Length: 216
Image (cartoon, rainbow, N blue to C red; front, side, top):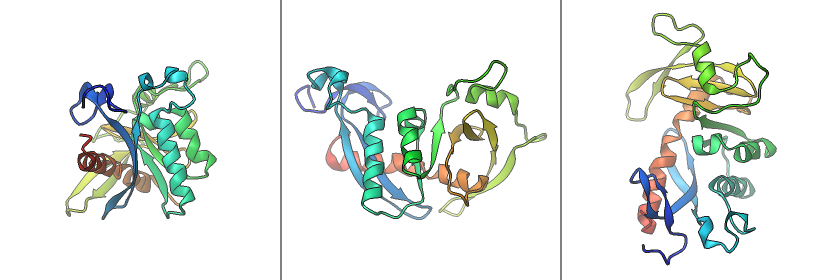
């Protein structure tokens, strides 16, 4: 792709798992347990293409682009229940506030290092919450056993924790945290776990879209 084609730049490329010269894009898709299809795709243009860099009014971060795609989905009157996103967006306050302002339910992943302001002595990060609520198969404590069924017919047992920590409702399976500050009113813990599981289709569709556009 060279260096002359916008929005090419040296940046982290998920398709190869490292920083290299290429295109990064943000996209939205609709998904349920049976099917998924892409809605919109928007390339992210690195700051060096703008006259004033990151301070240029035209520059947009990836979370800002993602929030625009959510707004577009709402304005198009597309029927959907919940916004689901990975930790790159769940950890970004600007993006997280967007669905709340739009009065949308959302389930987004969080990194273990995700933290918030808190009084001394109270839980202040997802990692600290994990230490307070340890899990073991023999003594699950407050963890709930949830059966996950997949469309190929197989079933897995997941463990999830509904733990109020600071400003978030944090849930966890052993390898992934996510937050759902504003889930749909009828969503229970099992429902939130199911919604989180739909995030896999974001990555799947993302790869297919980039390949179709020649951006991979």
